[in-house]
Image (cartoon, rainbow, N blue to C red; front, side, top):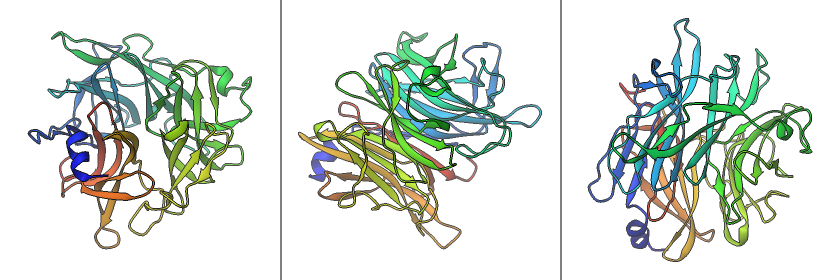
Length: 392
């Protein structure tokens, strides 16, 4: 597990995306480019006359389709009556480098007037199409809690890779039916799935596609007993054939990320209320989950004092030098109590050893959520700092 092999094989392209500030860098020239920043004005995909300036960007998701890297984020703003709205924004770039697009947005859900917030985008790729599972929420209430206004619906946003005005491939949200509902027989009262959730939404980041063409989506849910947990959705296709895994994580472990490991097994990293990052293993597509006590589970904490759930992290598998490994991005916290700052680090492990490659964010960035993408010989990363002076 040589560092030399890792840097030459993987860090050909490094993309980071932040809440209010985003950075893209290549190993060749170390160029850093802002992706999203406070005040960005983006056009709505369904209404050519609607442009919205956004206050902040959160919950990054990063995927590649047809050689195009796509960054998708929550886009936060307040409307004219000071109501908090959350739409979706996206920008794309050819995966071999180059300029990012100006971006486009789904400013609000055009098909459900009760939805004010589209939260926790979790993306999956089907050829040139990209589908994004989001939680559709009303104006108030935190996800996975009893809501004051009582409104929640699972939603799916969609777009695809096509030629832009310059003839180059880029991502575009669908100009018609940019959001839609989830198959009702999966989650509604007539569901054939054995579980019944009060709410569920994606874990953030991206799902994975297996060799047989099916998908696994990291999912977090609230049950009738008001307990929160993580599990996965198993889908034959992006729009049908969905079911949940039979087993789930321990209570109060949320924000899952999932990857395919050796012998078609799954690994799921979760963020738990006791301050730990717990990792679960399953050889049966979630028929049962076993905590990986001897390897990765509880190695990372969610804060300097190991309290609370912390933030979304990156968790992907990669084949480097013929060896299958796992890449993990998590912030390392420093500073006095109440003034801790998190600097994003990158780790590599083969489940035998763990190697810290050190910080991959700038020293002045207090990093929050992050996500990773490994595709071909490229490893983009997307991250979100909590507070950067002048850039939110």
